[in-house]
Length: 195
Image (cartoon, rainbow, N blue to C red; front, side, top):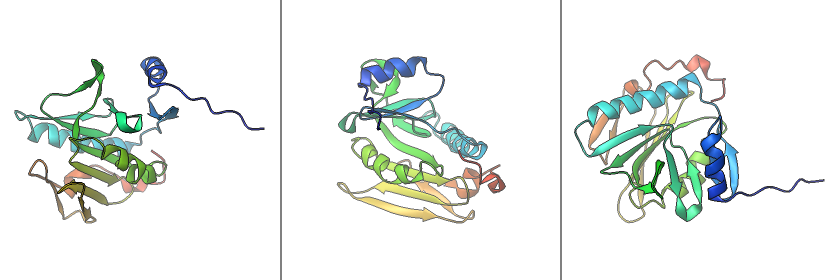
């Protein structure tokens, strides 16, 4: 006997999320608990955020980490990118200061349970955001970065970084960050722990 799947409206999700002990994503009616973050996941996201925060001070670009929710209206998705960047002023959903609509760059640290989703459906959802120009996926278990930059129309340029001697260019910012700095203080021996 199958139990019937309960579907929620975006409004029902937001009411629940405001009082939830742990963050959840919303996927077109379904509430999906987020996996816990590992120490490597946290370290990588923190490294990139700190770098962007420092390098972009006194500019029109503002980085945010972890807890700022993103609403993707076309696909009815609420999600929490690991790091996101907004150019200019944030555009809020219905005056909610915890939910934005206009990131130009997003970074996800891949976990075993979310890596396929982050590379496929989530990337498709993100591409529906007009301001979105750059997507970075960072492997937390070994050196490996997948970097997508929007070029003309709906075309995206892909670049892979697989050595700690390389330097990644955030093309939309004209800003370079070394792979070594991205992975600073990351211990790959912790790789079997889910996060």
